[in-house]
Amino acid sequence: MLAQTISLTDLYQPHEDGLAYFPSVATLSLGSYTIMHYYQYLHGESPSDSSSAGGGAIDTKPVLTIFLEPRSLVITRSQLYTHHLHGIDGITRDVIVPAQLGDDSNTSVEEYGTNITADRIANRHLVKREPFKMTVGEGGDLNRRKRISLTFRDVEKVFKPRFR
Image (cartoon, rainbow, N blue to C red; front, side, top):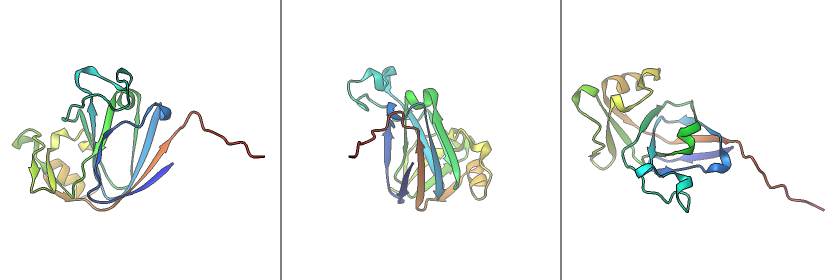
């Protein structure tokens, strides 16, 4: 288990957790909500296609975006784990735009937020708590706070030192 305290502006650029943790990783998100994006490599590249992990060019438009409420658990596995990267924008505010007003342009909002169209949030119909449910469904602003992330990974091989 990895425990991390994440401040408002911590940026987790698109990255892979690596094959050492395959086949899955579970992350429990405490404190603030967050929005996690999953990305793909350009031209069908994947970690196994590149000579070094993370060496391929990344498509900057997310293939999947999910809203993580406080106390939510996300489990990443299978193709999403092995062929995609994940990341969290280092911003303090999210501006959710109602789907009928336009597409997801990811344009900057006063240097501290990002527009995202509600219909780009894949799990919007699963968001249960207010004010998140209304904002994700109808649009509006949400301010991020400090978040604690508990990440659980199954490590296949663990080095066990020999003590004499």
